[in-house]
Length: 279
Image (cartoon, rainbow, N blue to C red; front, side, top):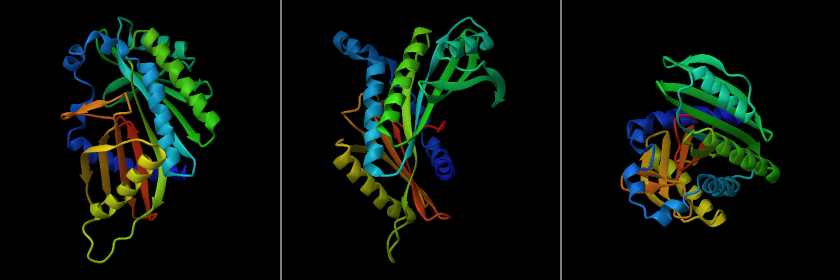
């Protein structure tokens, strides 16, 4: 619980800042680029297989940067064209996934149907909202925390089953995931050193080094953000198949650090292909 509270404070600050600099412009790969693929390239796309590979990489990153248990949140989310009512649509997905009967609630003026339960022993939460007549939006979250390799295998299987089930029902699912709850002792600012973001940059440098060395991933930095309390970097990673278009680059990994002055810790959050507000 303490780790989750630490993480939540940092991410709320981080997300608000990053949303202001354009997260909404990179929600998905442009349809025009997909249309330009050759037929063999299009056939090679396999969201379930790609998600399996990317989750393995994320677990490896977590193990590379901390020896302590950490939390992973996986999300499948996407549009669903259906003439079912919101309540009926939520019921269909909840039943297919083996979750509880949906209950309605209001979120930002919209009615959202929510259900929860377990998939392959992994905690799961489903949200469904109707965007317009005949079009819904579904988001399924899977959460697991620990360090046991068997747990990550469970999460992998739950991810596969959930993705298959959503796709079979007609949802167009997109995948992303994040590591939460990790923290390092805060770097000490030396006299005469630059602003707070330059101190956090040193933590990011250490993270980069560990990811490259231990997770054996080549990171190419393409974007960065920093202020007195938060710093993040976004990378192109050719070995990771699931990407999001950001400017002229297909990015696959974002690493963020938030300085918690109360605990004296640098709180770390790592997302692929990008950190999003839902975390």
